[in-house]
Image 1 (tube, rainbow, N blue to C red):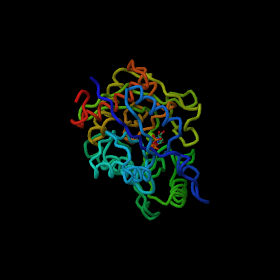
Image 2 (cartoon, rainbow, N blue to C red; image 1 turned 90 degrees about the vertical axis):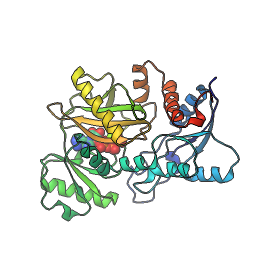
Image 3 (cartoon, rainbow, N blue to C red; image 1 turned 120 degrees about the horizontal axis):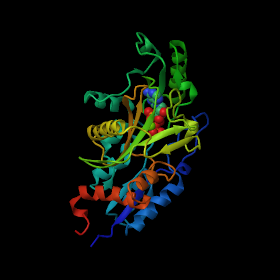
Image 4 (cartoon, helix red, strand yellow; image 1 turned 45 degrees about the vertical axis):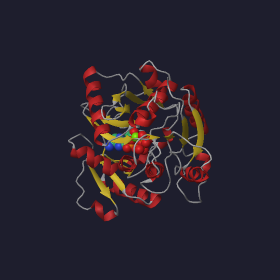
Amino acid sequence: MKKKLVVGLTYDLKTDYELEPGEPVDKYAEFDKEDTIAVIENALKEGGHQVIRIGNGKKLLDFLVGKKEKVDIIFNIAEGINTRSREAQVPAILDMLEIPYVGSDPLTQTLTLDKLMAKKIVAYHNLPTPKFVLVNEISDLENFKLSFPVIVKLRYEGTSKGLDKGAKTNNFSEMKKRVQWALGTYHQPVLVEEFIQGKEFTIGLIGNEEPEVLPVVQIAINGKLDLGEDFYIHSLVESTGVEYICPAKISARLDKKIQEIAKKCYQVLECRDFGRIDIRCDEKDNPYFLECNPLPSLALVDIWPIVAQQCGLTYNQMINKILSYALARYSSLRSGS
Ligand SMILES: Nc1ncnc2c1ncn2[C@@H]1O[C@H](COP(=O)(O)OP(=O)(O)OP(=O)(O)O)[C@@H](O)[C@H]1O
Ligand SMILES: [Mg+2]
């Protein structure tokens, strides 16, 4: 018989934080909304489990010090705060206390939030990723050799933070101006990457050493499938301008190629239980790894309900499948034990 578990939920809510004067408006964009927590909670309950809402990393500490209730496993989607290791905060606490949890460990969380480090690992394994230059200070642009256009993005952010139309630049002086703005606004290093002009895809994966690659999702912007110069800017997040097309409208060959690259990236970055890989193709349909999200949004407006449907599952079943991949890693929690 399936074992009923007590599942703790850790997450960062947008409403837990307030912007200080002068901070970028997208500072807390990655954090979740209440309704996302509710749908995950509901899914886990439908899976037969008891759910305790814990909240962010600090609330987890209070919960653990209080020791009033015991959890069997934590379903973690907390993004953490402050540093490029922020997504590792909750997993690190749980590792220290030997509390089982769903999702990637601190190393993978940190490695992938830092786009530069993730690209280095991916490139080391001969997987394609756009050429880039890291800019810590403006003098790092001396001897700049990338081909234009280039995109100027932040080294460790998500949710298209810092990206508006001006992030794609066509010449050195435009690029330099944008880099100066990004360094001054976000106070973190900047990645300048060759701009890949073509179709864009995001691929959900679940599982561990041999993950299941879920059906490829194609990103359409304002009805366009071949994005060319368009890209996913911050103002498009949760807007009707972005559509997730699944199955992707591409040849079986390209689909297979994208799935293979996504799987290898997930594996070399050592993701656990669930994650999402973002890929963009050039005009000749050559795919390039953009980034890996081991804490992809599980909001109903994101890809998971669509992808689940393509797999013949409900969203709730998909969430419980993710949980079951985590349980399989912890022998003491396997169903039936
Ligand atoms: N080299 C590139 N060439 C073309 N477009 C790019 C490139 N890098 C990023 N983009 C565009 O910017 C968007 C955001 O970039 P990326 O996925 O790297 O960052 P993110 O903010 O972490 O994304 P997410 O919202 O998935 O967390 C991509 O979805 C893509 O549209
Ligand atoms: Mg992305």
